[in-house]
Amino acid sequence: GYDYANIESLKITGVLNDVDFLFIYRMMPNLKDLDISEVNITALPTQAFYNSKNVENLILPNTLTTIGEQMFYQSKLKTVVIPASVETIEEFAFTNCTALTSIEIPASVETIDATAFKGCSQLATVTFEKGSQLKTIGGGYELYNSRYYYYGAFCQLNELMTVDMSECTRVEKIGDYAFYGDSELRLFKIGTATPPSCGTRAFYSINPYSVLKVLSGHADAYKAATEWTRFASITGLDE
Image (cartoon, rainbow, N blue to C red; front, side, top):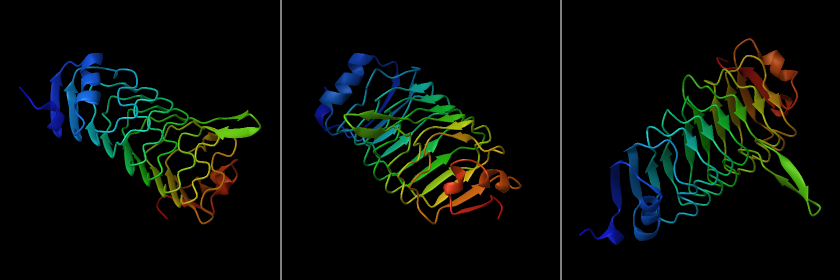
C-alpha cells in the first residue's frame, strides 16, 4: 500500500537480500536518506549503489566488514556513516562520488585499496578516528596505449585540503601515487613514529606550501624519508 516512488526517507531493520537492494535502486527514485544500520549483513550485494541516482545520505549496517569494489562508484552520495566493524575499503569503492565533501574513517579500517576515493572531486577533508588500525593506503599506475593511468586511493582530488591521520599509529605503507596531484592539500597529520614506506610519487604535485605534522620527536626521520620531503614544512603535532 505504500507509494514507494515518493518515499524520501527510510529506515530498514532485519535482513535485506539482493532483490531488496535492487528494489531500492530502481523503485524509489526520490529516496534521499537511507538508514540500514540495523540490517544484519556483513557485506552488501555487489555494486549495490553503483551509479545510484537517489540515495544521498546513508548509514551503513553495524555488522558490515567490507565496503566492496565499486560499491558506490559514481553515485550521488553526499554523506555516509561507516560503522566501526569495517576493516577494508576495496578498489573503486567511492570512485567518482562527486558530491562527497568529507569522510570519517573508523578505527577498525586496516586497508584502503587503490582508487578507493579517486575522482571525488569535492572531497575536502579526510579524518581517521581515534585508535585507528590503518596499515595500508593503496595505489598504483600503468602504461596503456602510450598513456599513464594513476590509481592512488586519494589521487587527483583537487579540493582535498586536510588529511588527519594523527590517530594512525600503525601505518606501514602508502602506495604509488596515493595522494598524487592533490594540489590543494595543505595539512597532513600522521601519528606513526617510523615514516611509512611510500611508493612512486605518493605525494607528487601536492600544494607547494603544504604542512606535515608528525609525532613529536620524529620530524627529522620524516625529513630524511623518501616522498615525505615533498612537504614544504615538517613539524611535530604539538608545534
